[in-house]
Length: 325
Image (cartoon, rainbow, N blue to C red; front, side):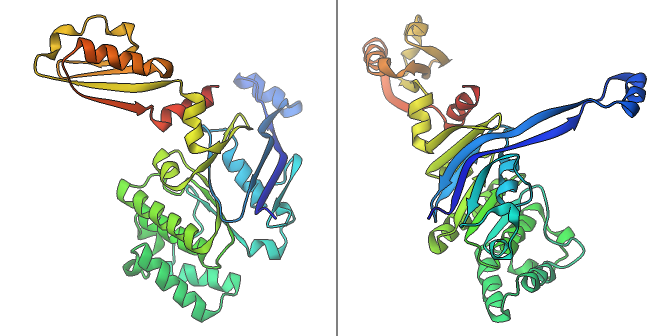
């Protein structure tokens, strides 16, 4: 049985559309105009147990709304979903004890309590045996290097430290499914790397099924082999991250490093492709895939080449093309 099964899931919101100006506000008192906005429209996908999948899309694409439906916080307008065999929005206790949701811009820790007491509160809610709780906290705080902050008030923790404790709180009851919505948002590069390393290790060692949203492509590249891309509420791509480039990037980046006398033969480079950079020491072109060999040969014949690099376009650019498509 798959860990997560989503079939034609949709959610529509009814929003009040205010007419402009004072008289528009007055008219709205007696007669209001509403419009329906689809946040998610007929989304379908499946995650097997133990998968760590990136869930990508531009702002407003429907990522967070989908996670909230799978966590049971929202009822869908259409479609079905099952997580670990449960219908999420039925909110059965057996399901609530098997998943966790971490929202990068929301807090589950109590700001006016030390981190240790906030974790203790979660222990009580989930009825975790005290010995197991102590071992889990010791292990997770050591892995995330926050043992010294356990007795610090949550409001006094840095953003990175607070995010680490949010993850610890979510994992105390050892959930089988973990929904992560922007877990590294606003963090410095060191904190981002530590959280990515921790999530990858936890997924490998515990087999937790993880659905991860992030606008930092470093998170996705390091953690996820498979990505699901959603745009305007609909799934537009579901497959290996490597296939994104193959399907949506029809060009490559060719960089030529020139010798000391290489500045004289740079005219006419636009005939080979889009010129990104042209200097006395380096030439950088965007070249169609089917012309890479031809262009490289011509450049090697016409310029004093010291070295040559051929690269795929950055994954961020490929993802942007998916959004545009």
